[in-house]
Length: 232
Image (cartoon, rainbow, N blue to C red; front, top):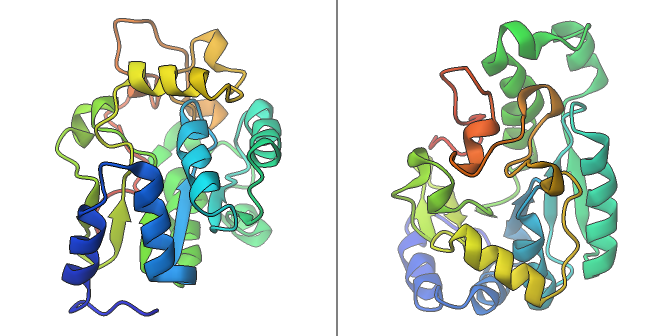
């Protein structure tokens, strides 16, 4: 089902009506949108809960994983483990081509002197290309992760007309942790080491309990987002 801009209001209305139940929200979105819908997952610290909801709603729902080539080895292993555990059958890795890496970051050190350019190469541009077939992307973003996300809604429309669904927008870290434990979901191995938001290895550090979860991302830089969630 293609969604034109004139259809967005109807889709938003139908999804908003069921937004209080994440599984029902995802199932309704999948029924409405079919292959025009994809889930974006980092397979990070809190990803298991959203993906468990996805598996319960429709295990064949498309899941996109941005394989930047700079992930922790633990993240790559966890991506396989969690998909198998949940029975997800349609996970696709997307990322920059070998030619793009060779041309723009041959030493793998672009992150050190131009992190925005590195994010554009490894995340923003690959996602823009990979998301062309999709009118709606599901994300695991939460309001409590950072001040830049404090006003987000469960169903939102970007300036470019694409819709984003954020089923966990109003969930707290404690609520997510409790539900993951209740469901006995496997945890990303780096969480036990203090990594509460997990991105690429060079730009992620552990945090203590006094910091928000995303304070360990691009620590010391005036940067809080990679750019994939900035409205187009």
